[in-house]
Length: 285
Ligand SMILES: Nc1ncnc2c1ncn2[C@@H]1O[C@H](COP(=O)(O)OP(=O)(O)OP(=O)(O)O)[C@@H](O)[C@H]1O
Ligand SMILES: O=P(O)(O)OC[C@H]1O[C@H](OP(=O)(O)OP(=O)(O)O)[C@H](O)[C@@H]1O
Ligand SMILES: [Mg+2]
Image (cartoon, rainbow, N blue to C red; front, side, top):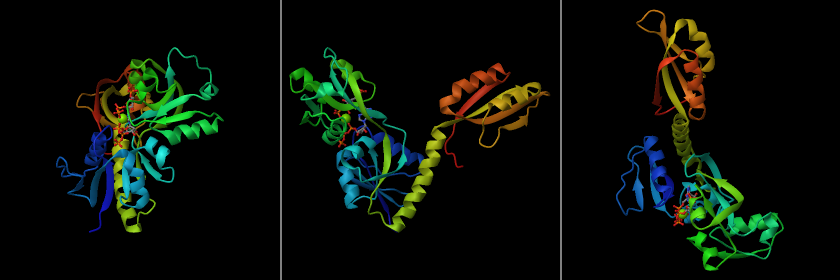
């Protein structure tokens, strides 16, 4: 049977979460150490472990059909590659930073300056858009050290918590783009493999939806039911079941993770008690 070839990062920031999302989709992979290729046991999928930076070219050439990759890498060297799902992990931004002591008012301050980066196309694109000329120094790692050793006046690199910038006495001055892990598709994917990709996307979507929501159960006195129900969204509407004790009901609902505490505070104030919160494994709408 034909198999969809998926590339995931061999080692690094994306590896673990990429394997986790496949696992949550019910796809188990025989994952021998040092193996560069593995087959899934229960889904027509073959996994290739590759360098994140090499993946755009493999997608372009059709060596792999899909990949889990940092969106920032597509911006740098895969603008022709299509994204079919945003996966919600490895969130970061690509930013320009300068020594803290240096004054900065706007991008024009970078005119004629030396900028060290691993993302030359991204920086060149940003500078061109702003009509600024600067010297780019391409380095592959430890970019944040460059100003401290006199290699550059500014840097452009990935920022997440900001602690690497802080430790190197740098300040973030411009955000060029925001990124997260995405599922990207080869322009050469065939129709029959697209059908398998659609099955995979369906599973991914139900896993992501489930991660974004929580299942809640609570006890509510019957005379406060309408008030509590009005505060709860639910998939269609909340479920209401009678408790063994007269005058009380059990109310079940689904709440978005982001608005969770806000809703809980409100239902509590409206008379709900014994509130239980459970993770959801899959959510099919
Ligand atoms: N500090 C961070 N916080 C969140 N996401 C990050 C962070 N650093 C990198 N990422 C994301 O994870 C991706 C992989 O980063 P990582 O440093 O593991 O590999 P890499 O050196 O860019 O790639 P390669 O696999 O080619 O060696 C990046 O492209 C980015 O999308
Ligand atoms: O804002 P922060 O939370 O500090 O994260 C940003 C740092 O994380 C990444 O490096 P990583 O740790 O992946 O090391 P690498 O340079 O070897 O890839 C990135 O290149 C930054 O240096
Ligand atoms: Mg890194």
